[in-house]
Amino acid sequence: MMETRNKFEKVFRCDLQEISDMLNSCMDYVEQSRVLTNDLTEDVRSRFKWVMTELLTNAIKHSGVPECAVLIVNDQKKLVLEKADKGLPLAIKLENGGKKVSWPLESITPPVEFEIYQNGIESLRLSAPSTTRAVFSVEEMESSGNPMISELTTEHFGLLILTKASDAFEYEYESQTGTNTFRCIFNLKPDGNEASV
Amino acid sequence: MILHTNEVDGVIQVTILPEEANLSNSELFKEEMISLMVNGAKLIIVSFENVNYIDSSFLGSLVVALKYALPRNIDIYLVSLKPDVHNLLTLIRMDKVFKIYKDHQTALETLR
Image 1 (cartoon, rainbow over the protein chains, first blue to last red):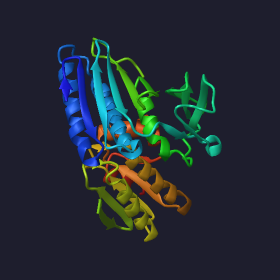
Image 2 (image 1 turned 120 degrees about the vertical axis):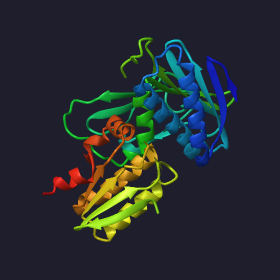
Image 3 (image 1 turned 90 degrees about the horizontal axis):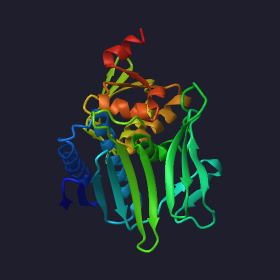
Image 4 (image 1 turned 90 degrees about the vertical axis):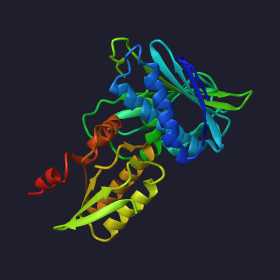
């Protein structure tokens, strides 16, 4: 483990029993690191914790490797949370036609944008500016109804939480080392009011 | 067992026992909920009073249980959600899919 005022790094063993300890270490660090600036609101704290848990759960469910690295960069105006591993690259099943897209992109020429799934009131989207990057976003749809529960609704809850709870969420595949990095950014404001999502 | 179950006047009241509702217990939750429905439950009131944290896996199981319930005219109500849990459901719009009440009493009052 490496910890300074601006940076926190720790290896996570991909085991369910380890989530709680890892979560507590990271939350303690984040709390302590923002004491002086007093800009960690309850809202950011909750969103950070949801995202952290989803990243660790994803590592257990999908990476296929025994450990991953967690990095928190404590910037002046933002918190950057990264999870990196050398396991299986990102692969996403799309709702439309059930096609599966995996990284690095091979048969698709970037830049390209996909809809991962939609529930009638919002659409979870992905843009790929290059063959090795994916940037996630959620678009509101013009509907006042309730969300539909489709085949893929539950499969993408994790991605939906990561995308909506972060101010920015992206994935990058490093071809030379085979490293997958998931990066989440949380904007902070010095007066204690976080930037709106 | 992840649920404490109690039947009062034909209404199944269940309480999720663990403080963390996550990948480690989501499958069991789903099985126990479906088992209650297979055994004839028509309304299940699920209390989250012990739950401090919920993740996407558990939310997924909750929705699978609802998907099983809907075509069979079974209702699932959620009660006693702590703010963090309620906020996560709101974030992914599941507050629009489930009937959520403050507590058991309030949920039961809607039936009168």
